[in-house]
Amino acid sequence: QVQLVESGGGLVQAGGSLRLSCAASGRTSSINGMGWFRQAPGKKREFVATITWSGSMTYYTDSVKGRFTISRDNAKNTLYLQMNSLKPEDTAVYSCAAATKDGLRTSESWYDYWGQGTQVTVSS
View (tube, rainbow, N blue to C red):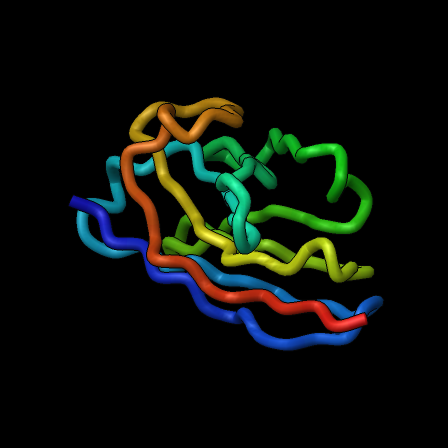
């Protein structure tokens, strides 16, 4: 089993920045592809960003391209999401996810493990 714990969320003004972290524990050797998803109040969870095991390939949803950066440190078993130029519409609970297969995937069903999420609130 793998446990994922997110941190770094909070309240920030529009235009500000936050960096989310996702610490993995347990059978971390089974982790390959990873991703970030978010769920705003009253909406379905949506894909944000994904990264391969090596970190050499990344993919983002259009609404965050150029503002968010996904990265990982495999030595520390940690996934990151640097969020810049935040907008009120970025307000959501952000969750990290890990898969036992490698690759870039936007579908929730592809991921095997999920964190509980961290709240990000952007005020206007």
